[in-house]
Image (tube, rainbow, N blue to C red; front, side, top):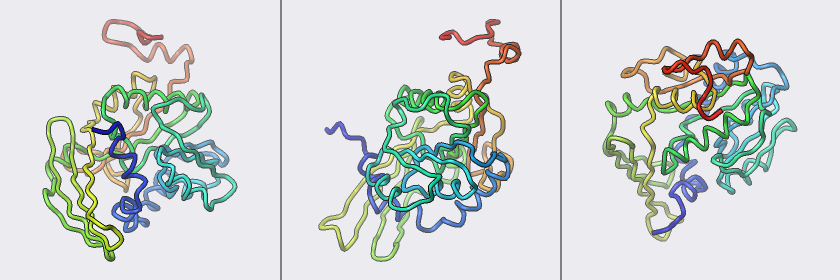
Length: 268
């Protein structure tokens, strides 16, 4: 057994990017356009793109005049992202479970299901704490996740994709807590087929609400698709959550009331 998590090598792989990103560039751009139109960030706003990969979304956001920082734990992704880009964008290797800038960003984006891969709930809580800590009071975070209920109902157990000379044999299944995807890759450049098994937590809207709330982030809006249509627990494919960091104004404490009558978190 190795201590290296499956995603550390897989997210670095060119086959990962070929499988997930090469065929949906236009969809991604339209989604970013709608998000920016909806959020109306001021030019020069400080933005962090969490799990930025090779910087696709970061470059799109930078195109709106935002000051963008992209972070990813895969060194090859960051090396690729740093090859070219405008002056208002920078990239860093960083594991989001560990702290970085505090009270710095106006907006944080975690897109294309760039969450849910860690082994334990505690690791995901660590990541959520980092994201919350990086935002200024009043800052906004956007999570783009799959809708687990829709995914359960529409799971395709077996699929074959051929992209150029590469063949992907995909098997999917799930249990009470996770989705799994076993991908077998055959390519002329590989001496033998390469196999990876992805694991994704079944985080529901309630899970996100709890994780966010514990870090002083309050859900503002929830959408169900990349057109920012209304979320439906069974009918929409995405779970897009927009939350705001508490401003710590005195009146905010009056708005937040816990079930036992407290107005502050037990750990504060």
